Length: 272
Image (tube, rainbow, N blue to C red; front, top):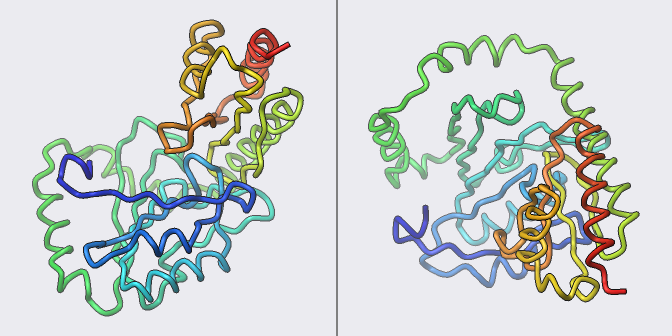
């Protein structure tokens, strides 16, 4: 979308062995006078990280220093496992304007219900002065494919969904994440430096020296799909070569079957 609109996107690194925290030193080096915002995805797709209040405070302090508004992608908001607390960026950023992006599809497990929202948190009216609010209003008025039926249902969904639903969903996802981590440990050539803390994803590092005939993450994913009908996303899609992203929002029996196939695949292709 940035490319289509003629906007240049610059990518900062996340640190795998520190729960995928943002590399703030690198981030600052990417910023110049033309930089207009930073994007934070928390809880994270594709990494499964849930940023702590302490880390978010450092990120927001850096954004304030650099005079950068924040776009907070929180579509996986509140999908956090035991011991982790989801902190909305806007709840931490007092002096930094934030656009929070959310929606129904993930937390409420209705991926076909394409209804989302943007929440404006802007104590000093910076977005209004920059005509951002005006632009968002015009965009909403131009949309011709409004999901009116889902819009009508949204207030009841937001107000009346019992806490037990959220707790049960998070517990099921956490068990699925543990299953994936356990299976990864059994397969030489695969590694997961940071276990998922939330969302629905896990990033798996590939030791391609053990799978030389597959060349890279794209070759690994292509062969896995062709031979075993298991679909994973190459890390190259996220600027992370020789990693793969796996989604674990599935029943344990299906995940076990998928991991059986992955284990068999790796055994066949591993350098003897």
